[in-house]
Image (tube, rainbow, N blue to C red; front, side, top):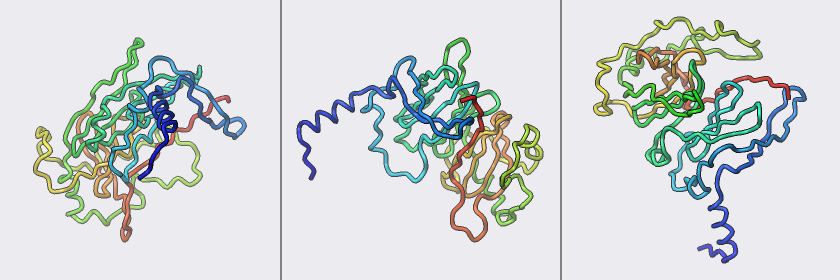
Length: 280
């Protein structure tokens, strides 16, 4: 048993009552001109997300999957998915930032909802997966009114996807497939990042009108790898299968296997990097 002195407890209580994030947020940015890290201060505009005590999520069970590790750059602002389930919009032009409420609340995080922030065709997108249910929102900031608009809400069909495993395609990973090993390659244009065709390797699914989580063979092991930068497509993985999921049509394209043969572990996480040069 650990006993805390009254002074220590009072200090802890004072910290827990502090608003968060702070009014002045200090961080470091890498200067493209000097190649060095330098401190940068962002001043908050608007209200905080809550207090330190409000945002503590210590009671969450241990999870090997990442939480709140994502960010997206869009129109001279960096959108950061923060611990405690909120988004910070950091304006790079005037060094201010604001708090944007997440489309899901913190209580959903306690129920194993996996969330992801990224950029796609129309701006900043937010995805949440619970079991097999995929929800995707688009951030609308028109006319100084910030709101999340629900774009997609469907239940995924993993049994159909995993049919490629039963057909023997699991071990037929092609080296000339859609995955690219980037070794000191030059910057790619928009045309360079297009993968083959929107109609290649389409997985036939059964009855998309059944929006239920019941009656499936395979477990709930979905992960979001990222969004396509120019199309409303989200890249997903389950049971080492990688697919491109079209938000407008619910079409699913098989992309390949993320777990090579004779390897125990596949890919369940990704870091989407968006190069951005600023005169700093």
